[in-house]
Figure: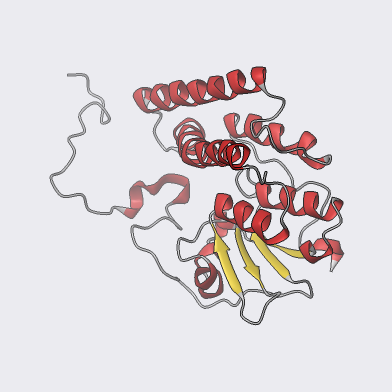
Amino acid sequence: MPDDPIAAYTPPRVWTWNAANGGRFAAINRPVAGATHERELPVGRHPLQLYSLATPNGVKVTVMLEELLALGHSGAEYDAWLVRITEGEQFGSGFVAVNPNSKIPALLDRSGAQPVRVFESGAILLYLAQKFGALLPEEPGARAECLRWLFWQMGSAPYLGGGFGHFYAYAPSKIEYAIDRYAMEVKRQMNVLDRRLAASEYSCSGWRPTGSSRSWVAPASGRLMLAKRPPLPGRQVHTRGGV
């Protein structure tokens, strides 16, 4: 056997956490949930409060909110608050109260009598589509088609693309098998999308973007492959509208 610590690694019968093995994210990664510190979330003047970052996953909700505003839904006005995930802000008590999984994006809808928290990007997209009656087909077959592709994306891209980006760009040790495995699966998923788009202008055939999605959805997928972050479309953080 070669003198290689990776090749010589034997998985333990019971895994225990070794924070020193966390690499670049050792300071924020841990095997338990919950808040690590007290920090209230800021709240702006608009009905919707978005807590996110311009990652390929985080940008989805911003794109949809801008689409809704372009369609004339004034109730979709929102404040966009930056959550610096590399600094552990997603583990603050306020953010954990909105999303106990400590992942961006997270949405707080304050338009009703009681605030509604929504987390997981796909759940937020579906919530907004149903709330405003827009960007989701009403015909059952077309709606099922749209939801199929939404849940395909949610179940494939974040985990596989994130795994590829982690082992390729961030892992403290370059593991050939891990990189090859994730690269192969990401390539396969992108081929699924290529084949879909060869037959349909958009993955969800019943949906027509107003403009911003044409510019931002595809680059987000491409930059995911390159482990780069796309900026939020048309807005500057800290809050929407420069507040």
